[in-house]
Length: 96
View 1 (cartoon, rainbow, N blue to C red):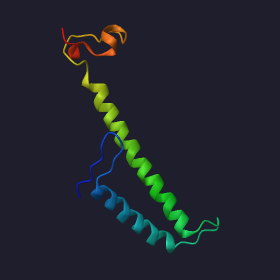
View 2 (cartoon, helix red, strand yellow):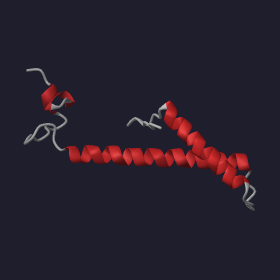
View 3 (cartoon, rainbow, N blue to C red):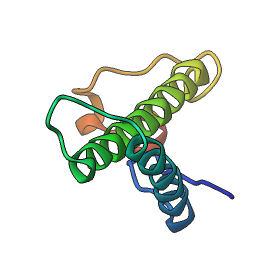
View 4 (cartoon, one colour):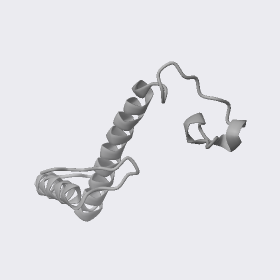
């Protein structure tokens, strides 16, 4: 399954199906166990699904952030100008 996540936090339909398949497997496992905390199976499954999606997005954000951090400067040997210069636009987007 090609589980695709955008850097903005969007899941592809296949990724959502994968989350649902894993959640159903968790529900089947949790239904066989006895819990004494009073949380219903429906609520427990919903909590798992939420935590699972959050964990996937945290991993996605960490990977995207790492990619940005190792990318370096926009052009080799260039230093970014201050945000006040060129009305906040980067040097390479200013028309001279």
